[in-house]
Structures are given as structure tokens and as C-alpha cells.
Image (cartoon, rainbow, N blue to C red):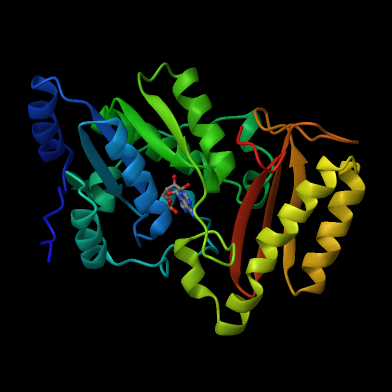
Length: 287
Ligand code: AMP
């Protein structure tokens, strides 16, 4: 069995290790995560391995991106299990700083982005993307990777990070990775373990409804009526819908009427668990 390896805890140790690889002219890919590794995370690692000489995975449950009534304290954590999975996956280094290393006493800088962060999850979670933008900026400076990989599962986050590195001229390539799903269509997520057995049985309806919505759009149905139908189906199945929407895949601007190219995005609660998912239009393409 593969041995788990010790994570690097400090930026100083991290930079020492990375300097050796860089001096040898080797490339580095970063996969930022909040841990509780699942198939989605490991698919990012696989993609990273195919693109760079070394793969660094960060594990940091970032308090700054959780609201006061959100699940920071209870967020799933399994560092020992994560280290074994990442060693088996062939990761070269795990950076797992504690909160004091990332946010030392007196920390007072926040990266705030307008526009892309304002709707969707940003509307429901007011400081979320400031927390994300700040921690991603820090991780990109700390690791200074050649590339960083982000999942389309968090589609708005992917666009925010892409915009962030462009706006701040951070010299890194942002690589998008496709959404990994369970056999029944539910997107892998660390939060899926919150679902009760009954909720888990109903959960695949989320993806199915978004796919049906995308198909309706492909067949020429207008956004508004397709969205109403999807919302009705989800509510009928016991979801509390935060948003179901059809957006421009690059700008996240709201689209109306029939569309040729779009992204369907949704967030909904099953019990206490907030699920997010998205699909491209047309369904068979990826933008
Ligand atoms: P998280 O630990 O939830 O912050 O996720 C870390 C990274 O994994 C983010 O870039 C996510 O978009 C990505 N990710 C999470 N779930 C999936 C999934 N089901 N498929 C692909 N990527 C995912």
C-alpha cells in the first residue's frame, strides 16, 4: 500500500521545495482544494499530472469564504485519508497550512472583484468570492505554479479566477476541468456526505432537470419558460431552489428568449445541504 506523506505546513518550507524543481527547469501545476478528496478532486490531479512535471495540491478550508451561518466548523475534514489518496494518485507535494499561516495576526488585505461575483452564488453568499479571490491570490503567489486547475463544477468560481489572474497579471495558466459525476448523474462534492439516504436518492433529479432544461433550450424553447418548468420540477421533488438560470458562458450575463450557446446554472437546497451544478448548451459541447 502507498504510504501517505507528510504535508508541508509553511510557506517557507513550500518555497524551499519548489525552488529545487524550478532550478531544475521543471514545471509545476497547482490544484487548490478544501480537502475531503473525492473523484472530482482526483480528476484534477490526473489532468495536472498530464500537463506538468510536478503536481502540488493545497488543502485549506478557507474560513474567509464561509458566511457566519455557513458550515465552516462542520465542513468535512479528513486530512489523513486525503494524504493517502493523494500519495496514491502520484501527487508530489501537499501544502496544508493552518489558518494562522494563511491569515497571520493583523491580516488586513482582501481581493474584491465586482461584476462576475455579484450574481448567482455571490448574491446568496455575500463575502464568498472575496474570500475565494483572496485565498486563490495568496496560493498563486505562494506556489507560483505554471498552471492552476479548477473544476467547472464551480463554474462561477472558475470564471472569477480566470478574470482575477488576467486583471492582476498573475503569470499562471488557468486550466478548466470537466465535472465528474456519480453513475446516477449527481456531481461529486465534499458536501454530498451531508445528504440523508432519502435525499441522496432524490439528488440526481438536480442534474437531470438541468440537462432537460438544456435540451429544451436546444430545441428552441425560450429561456424564461424553460426555467419556470425546471424550477417547478425541482420544487416538486423537494428542492428549495436558490437559483436556476441561463447565462452567457463567458460573462454570466442573463440571457433571454431562444439561445444558441449558454450555460445553465443552479443552486438548490435538499434539506440543509446546498447543491450547485451546471451544464453547457448545447449539452454535447463544452465551452
Ligand atoms: P473544493 O475542495 O470543493 O473547493 O474543490 C476543489 C476543486 O475541485 C475546485 O476547483 C472544484 O471546482 C473542483 N471540483 C469539485 N467537485 C468537482 C467535480 N465533481 N468534478 C470536477 N471538479 C470538481
